[in-house]
Length: 212
Image 1 (spheres, rainbow, N blue to C red):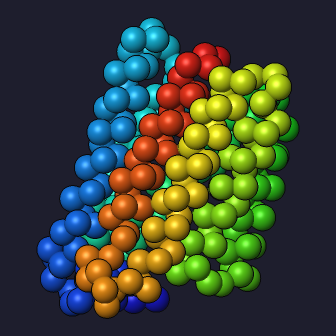
Image 2: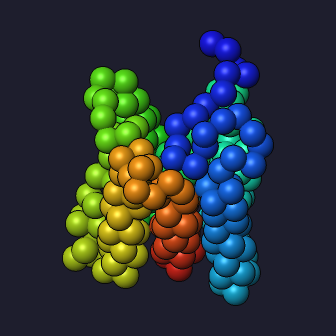
């Protein structure tokens, strides 16, 4: 694979210039805001929550990595975008199993790895939705966790449900981006960034308040 190959996948980007996606690039600041807000909440709660602190750092990395990808726009830069997102998804999945459901570490890791394998399998074999299929397992996990927790931990369930609802809307904007280029040249991908920052904030807020 040519890691320097340009990636022109979004309405805003018409060529390989650094600043060809201004909205897609600048909107990543929302992840930094979400990380800062979560860190402030963590400090107010005492600050002794290493898993949450790690996910806050990953959230900031998501913003930085996505900014690099939407400016440099190469196959290599794409790794800086997708890897932090994957780390957050599987990291939060593991945290949820431990914190919300009380699973021991070994079985929680086993379930997380099974979820990762299923997610990669779906991504490899199911195409469509402008690449949004890859995120459907994460949405399904959020909805499932919210449903399972509704009777036993309602506050956590409500937080996860709110994140799932927001994520569903953000996936919609990601999916239609290429379809609206003619009528809306800026596209809708920047809305995916803004709403996903809200999703990560809701997830971090829920995890921090549900202390270990």
